[in-house]
Image 1: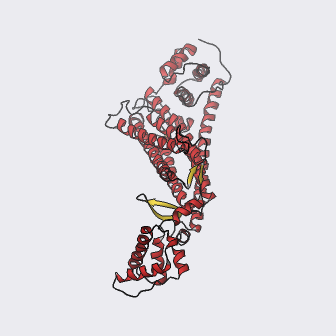
Image 2 (image 1 turned 60 degrees about the horizontal axis):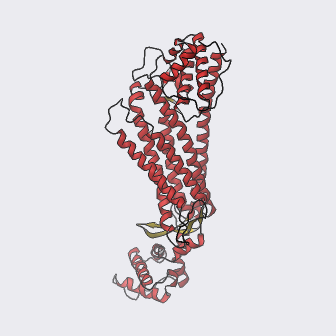
Image 3 (image 1 turned 135 degrees about the vertical axis):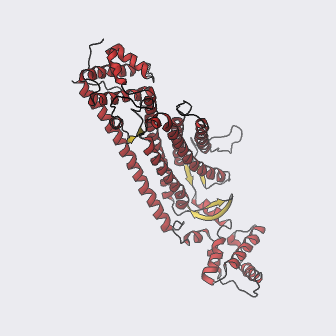
Length: 487
């Protein structure tokens, strides 16, 4: 037995992404709790602390074996401190250690991913704020619908991402609960203080029922995390699909700057392939596919089996973070051309809804009559390859009279002067005319983007505060080890 005893725990740099690291952080927490509860003597606590510190130091050496198996780590401790150090395992099992390690690893990955998620939202918000009132088309059924403003369009995705943030934080509330001390599912006869273990490891509470903690909650937690990850990925995949569809235009209004986000053809010199978008598509599909894989893997499995206790949810959470990094990189290289977007709007007839609305609101023309007239305007213009601005005013007068004739009225005159008629068929007018809350009008775009700015700041604060809580738990463990070693 070694007689060496450091006066303080050796501060070593171990990767926090390994099970070896988190197994030994649990060992520290268990040791502190056992000594505080009087389950082991002070002298034994000091011996265990010394042995554990040396095992951790050995594991920190380059190329060292870092076992995830408690029995291997315990054997190394026994070689240093003798068989009495095995009392560290009082009231525990590799079952609850394993479930706790899984949560601790997921917890770290989750917070890293959440930070990447916040960065991606910030990049998207910055893009929206650069040209908030620029006019662009959006589509329903793959066909140009009504014009909108860039801040309104991107703000819709930002609002969807805020919902993702709600889901992530709600999932965190159930992730950051401790199974430790539940042993193999039925606890033990030792007076293990599970609440103290949770505090020392930075958990917010307990998975209270020990059977649930060891044999059920792991599956439930994995399903929740993979599902909310898939939900977040689907939002990003929709944005990526939007950009990809319009990118096929010879003159897209969203384009990627040449560089790391674009690629060239080996044979076609004109091509600038949007590889950043392709990479983002692959990332969203991979997250969603891996999430579905876990649902299938965990289905119809009796409690206590290993099928649903693997690292699949951890992989999904990490892949989600990579996806958000890819999104940030793509957005940073994305250039919006407001003139080209407005041209796309004004070359089509997506603003004719407003023409019918103006006739009803300002000239008391029944909506269906106005709608019929606007539809005839579209048919006339498209059949002659005319843009809305090129429709002759006298033709509009004739079409308006014919629209009324379809409803039994003759000699009706278009109640709009030519300047009013021209303005009604502009994208700018339609966007500026919006009235209800949540629309693309300037005041609402400003208000909604401001709300997203406030929400983003609140989420950054949540992440920082959560990190400080975990740092405090780290400090408590280290101070607890110091007290044991200095006795």
